[in-house]
Image (cartoon, rainbow, N blue to C red; front, side):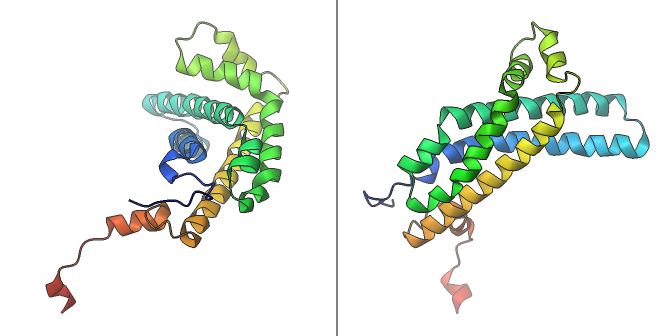
Length: 193
């Protein structure tokens, strides 16, 4: 078991709520978006989809936006700017401009996205919430795609800072390097000879 120095303000990767938000919600949004985009491209090329593909495309689309909504809510709930300023090493302050930009972007359509998410993950009682999300002139689909990309960059940069921190502070069991060590096959003495 590894021991973190008391002055090390980066939590263990398994207890880092930012990494949890990334792994449990953002990656689900990313997977659903990529599946939706794949089927959208197929429709654009062929001009049609099978009935099963049409159903799947709708599921991927709604689930993508639902998980994007949960990611936004988690980002706000964590008070990301304050978390980075108060509870992370100094190097993480470079993420503040991205955090501020994400906060501004989220505010643009957070209400309609929250309503949309509620109607995806709860028994739908108001079909109008989904229709309102796509109100004429709102450009919310473009906004959602840009927001997804901004989250992707933020989480990428955050994870890079974590990886560097783990290496510099000798936290060998954490991060990608720690996982690759754990997965490396054990070599026998005979194979070393």
